[in-house]
Each structure stands twice: as structure tokens, then as C-alpha cells.
Length: 209
Image 1 (tube, rainbow, N blue to C red):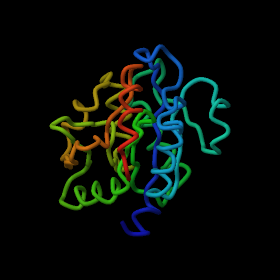
Image 2 (image 1 turned 135 degrees about the vertical axis):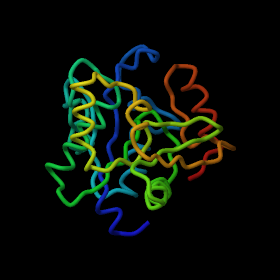
Image 3 (image 1 turned 90 degrees about the vertical axis):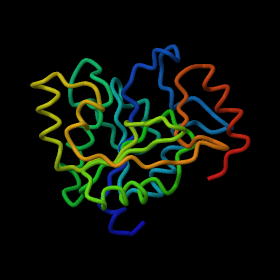
Image 4 (image 1 turned 180 degrees about the horizontal axis):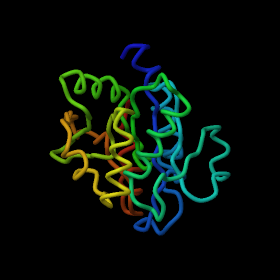
């Protein structure tokens, strides 16, 4: 990964969901292996991107200790991860005009790889608009590298077409899907339920990054 790529990238940490399957609250504030998941994600993001921002709804003060800009969804009523991605694209355009990319990362993924940005950028370099990831045969479209230039197109899709599904929107563009091995630990394992948290705790004992 080049210094130029790092400086041109804003890492967007997505924490705007309702966490219904976890019983509510902020999933990222739960601990895995003695560390909160969000701390793990922030560390990985800071190692790869020039700026890190947090997408969250409600009282932003609950994330104050992290010292990150906190931005709410750009579309109201918990419109899903696309709303958070749009908010991140808008923030990058307004606050970091030199930034050309937004790297979206969920805050419930404790094992993210350190080479994520570099590999996604390789996928973009092959003539694609967007790059995302796959592991164990499953795609993870919320983990992706997005060009800031698509923000107005995304806004129109969400507001004029009521677009909510990531896959439906990205189908309009050339998308690179990069594969990662899912063993011994799937780097894109996400903890959505209490049972997932138990599994994440088990996996943390063998995970290295």
C-alpha cells in the first residue's frame, strides 16, 4: 500500500444499525478476546487510511472517547448501510477534498485483515468502479472501497428510487470481488448475535493479524 493511497482514503466505520439480533445497543462496544470490537476495527482502519470517521445514529457522545468525527445517516429512518456509506462519501467530499476513496468497515468484525485496502485498490486498478470482498464463498458487500465521485448517484438512487440494497445499487457498476481464505479464521466474521459473540471469543484465541 502506498502512502498516496492511504492519504486518499477515508475509513468509514459503520455503527448505524439497530442491532436487533443482539438485543439492541452498539455491537462494537462488546468485547472479544479482552478488547472491544470497535477498538480492534479502529486500530485496523488507522493502519490503512489517512482519516477515520464513525457513522452512528442517536447520541454521538457515547463514542466521544474515540476522538473520531461521528456522522449520522444521510437518509433518515435507519435506511441501512447504504445510508451510512452515503454519509461517509459526503463527509469525505466536504472535509477531505483530496480524498478519492471511502473504505467502509462494519464495527462488528473483529478480525479484519491489514492488507484490506491494498488488495481492494488492486481490484479497482483492473478497471473497476467498486471493490468488495468474499470469503468462504460468501460476499460481504458492506466491506468495500467506494469512489467519492459516486456520491451524487447514490443519493439519487436512495432518495428518488428508494434504493436500500447494496447489491442492487452496485449492480449498475463494475465491481471487483476479492477473495480471502476463511480458515483458520474468517477475516470477515461478523458478530450479529449473542451466539456469534461466543464463537468470536473462541476464534480470538487462534487469530493472528
